[in-house]
Image 1 (tube, rainbow, N blue to C red):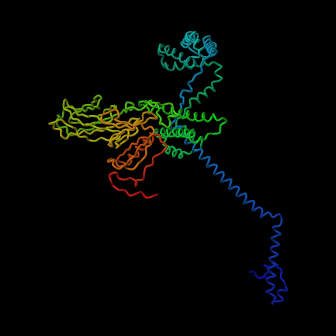
Image 2 (cartoon, one colour):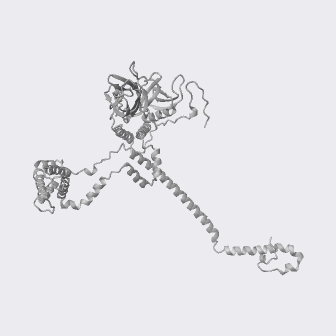
Image 3 (cartoon, rainbow, N blue to C red):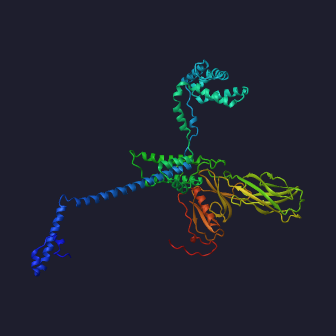
Length: 610
């Protein structure tokens, strides 16, 4: 506490009475404090009195700061919402570009010519007649003039052309093509000219023809026509379309790559399956609106509710028809099966027939088989100078033969290719006159691609007991073959006995998939199950079923098919392939590894809760 006698506290003024009477000093202290504090307060009041601005300004500045912060938060939130909308639009654009099943983009827009009418025909006649009379500035030789005169007299003035123009059957391009065919015959009959090719003559004559045909009137509109032609010819590639929409929607390149990979746009099967799932969801929504919830938009008339549902159905029908019209794959058989829908969708679609059940003859697989002979070891029964060769034949097909080689040098790379409908059976033989050594191969599309040694079956009493042939077998997977391999299976309608079979998932059309089991040497499936209406999912091992380590099933009203295989990764691939084929909305999720139990009787601890 400051001393009341200090000059700083009193502002330079002293009270003589305080110093003259020391005993009264304690009582004088409070008085000095009150006086000094009142003076200081008076100064503060005087400084704050004019207008009271500092206190009110502080409140205004706080309110202004809060308002700016609120506006900034709203701006950031608005930008985030716009960003999300742009990303959603870009995902939609990505899928449309990657799999344009509903787009029929014409590639000949620039070549669409307008029909020539009667007035235009007369104008063309006048222009060519003016050229023949020498009234134009187009320089031409005698050969070109003769060609134009023949074209004018024989084509333009003919009654047949007049009737065609009157009926709307001629275009400017037709006129040009007739002249081009005419001069091609004439130029071919002309003698060769040193330094001037006939192609140059043809292009020069065509350019002069275009100048005569256009005339002065169309020369004024030529820049506009050239611009429109350039625009119509601008058909962008997928990469160019991606770049264009990235600039429009402000999407960065790495975001495009993340979205592209996340949507699996490089997988055509996944795109088609996603479209099938979306269309199925739209059908379910229409059924829900029409039968269950009856939640319609507000209409002027109640009669418009039925029309609204019918429009929903027809739009889905159109999209389904467009998807179904696509071939399964390029270069493969184009199976155009009628659409067969589940019972839930039959009320909406009249495009299928209840009797259209998939038959075994509808499922056709065509394989390309390549055999590469590398080396033969242990060939002792043949003289070194004798000629040997290899033959290959597929059951039911013709026999193919490799090049010949000496028995002392049975090395090289001799290959043969063959296309067959049989799944996995072929014979390979090393022949020398009548002696044959055979090896039977069972190739699959999942087999090894590198060359391997195979022990050959030799005739009785042969010296070649250790005969081996090193060869590589390459079997290409057909485009309509989505997955294959050995599975255990049992069902209520098909595969009624639990056993191991070779299965192939075949796509017959865009909406028709079949699970087929095959036997060796058979081109047609032994049994098949159409996947329409089934739901595939992972499941636990079933008691009493011996064989297979991991299980999954396909469920439908009135049917349950159980599958099993020995490898977890193989099960995941099968479930993913069947999930795309069924078009189901539910996406199967692989179980945790510690939930997998041993179907051979081993106990398993329950998984701990997450």
